[in-house]
Amino acid sequence: MTPKTNGRGVQVEDTKICVVMVGLPARGKSYIAQRAQRYLTWLSIPAKTFNVGNYRRNDAPQPSADFFDNSNAEGERRRRAAAEAAFADMLGWFRQGGVIGIFDATNSTKDRRKWVMDMCTREGIEVLFVESKCDNEELIMANIRDVKTTSPDYQGQDPEAAALDFRNRIKHYEKVYKSIDEDGDESHYTYLKMMDVGSQVIINRIQDYLQSRVVYYLMNLHIRPRSVWLSRHGESMYNLSGRIGGDADLSPRGHQYASKLPELVRQSVGDDRPLTVWTSTLKRTIATARFLPANYNQLQWKALDELDAGVCDGMTYQEIKDVYPEDFVARDEDKYNYRYRGGESYRDVVIRLEPIIMELERSEDILIVTHQAILRCIYAYFMKKDQSLSPWMNVPLHCLIKLTPRAYGTDEERYQADIPAVSTWRGKGSTAKHEDPIPEANMSH
Ligand code: ATP
Ligand code: F6P
Image (cartoon, rainbow, N blue to C red):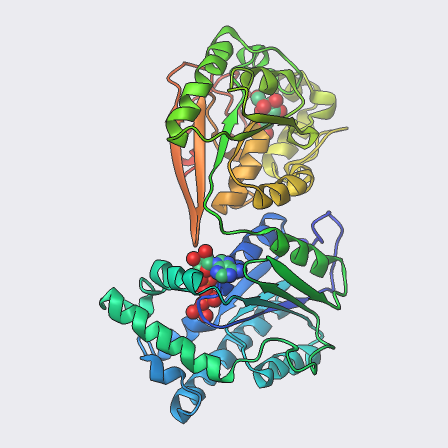
């Protein structure tokens, strides 16, 4: 079973939290739930979303708005059955070691919230309500247009008619909706209430570290359109000689990449808006970013420095195998968890990158010039890559990656500089200085 940690590598065997989403339809609940799940999973905290809509669709695939009218007894019964089925599956998952279950439904009445609260309390599960409240008509209409008219609920239907039906569905919910603690009788609950996409938040009775991590993360989310650009540094002298770590200079071809980077960035941004640039504190990333326009703000982060190879810093993989044969094998067996003597594991890197992820969520357009292992971890966050596979991903040199977060997923585009570079990818067991990556190692797999 995956060890349960609180995101700082500390085991939290007994904590179980049910994050209960609250809010009218089209308020971004599923969006928030997916984000929270992705973040927690990236931190190796077992987290799973249970979307009641998916259960309801098994029984009522394309119901019209009337199905959601509270005075429709039959609709009410079937909706409740869907909620109970999702909840039962969530309890089963908790019993098998789940730590944070996200119960994604409107949970928009006091009765429903009390039911969830009672059921969880009986099972020793903490409850954190997360409400998204939003009265911005324009935003709600955009949400309906962008995600609701294309949902399976309306597959094959006219988008205009679908939008109208969805508006009617919301009206039915509005008749019975109570914002959390609106009447002052839910003040004993633990909750985060976000108004108008976080422009105002209320936090009530947060109980422990894990809850506060989730709350802090959710408070940093925004939905303004933006992209994140990722690049490794240009080819370095160490890359040429197959050495790891260090603080080497760029190779001549690495310098060529640095000269070409501004053009590559301009091409991928598509207009003149300036980006903020983050590099590590190592020479090779700073040198790679040095020709970017002067109006690009540049910031150096220690947290973006390459994975620390400890006593192996500056060695080739062959030298590591010769001097530390057991370590060489142990690393290949569990590359994510293996910690270099006196250095770091990928798991350690993920933990030190948490503030970077937090800051990235708060920010808009950012270009990150960093290192192979770091880029793998950041990429894994955005693209939901399995952490046991991410350390084996091929991240080519001299390639700019543009990631654009969308409502459900992240779009990816690549820009090749067409400047040759060695491969620093290494397959399991290999000590080759430069090896051609196998297709399965390519990042989009
Ligand atoms: P339903 O109850 O029908 O499942 P929902 O509340 O789960 O609806 P989502 O499917 O998550 O709604 O809506 C996604 C849209 O909400 C996206 O377009 C996203 O940009 C937007 N969104 C994300 N966060 C918020 C927020 N805090 N407030 C309003 N809209 C948001
Ligand atoms: O070889 C380049 C490099 O950035 C090294 O400095 C670093 O130790 C290594 O990649 C990380 O990759 P891996 O985890 O595959 O050894």
